[in-house]
Amino acid sequence: MKKFTAIFVLLFSLTGFASAVQIGEVSLSGTITATFSVTITPATASGQLVLTNSTITSNLVIAAAIFATNKNSWTLGVYSLNGSKLIGSTGESLPYTFSLGDVVGMQNITLGTSAAPTTKVMTGKTPSLLENMSITYTGNPLLQEGIYTDNIFLTIAGN
Image (cartoon, rainbow, N blue to C red):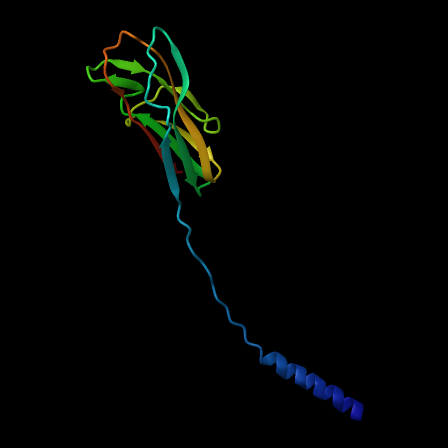
């Protein structure tokens, strides 16, 4: 009889222990917002255009661009204030083509203006993508002397 009592006490003790267990729950959630950035660093060699007779200047690096985003699908846009033309103070222009890196693959394109930017949909988030910006043009020594300018704009947005 002693044996039976010991088993009964053990079963009773286990049952009492199981009923004392309490379960609590904490729900965790948060939002990670989309981030986009583009940083442009002008090249130190930019600024001097060679305009000798029919000289083709290819892939003159004008700046480096660093893109960063945590979106898996994003759009890169580029446009020019003057539509891929360097404009002089007298209104004369020097057309050029624009290239943006090997990964992005925008090679030798004529840029539109803000009304018609060139865009490319990119896939894969990137914490830091470095690409060179360059221009190609053919020199024209008959252009009026002066400073010729254009502004290039890069945009990055999520899809």
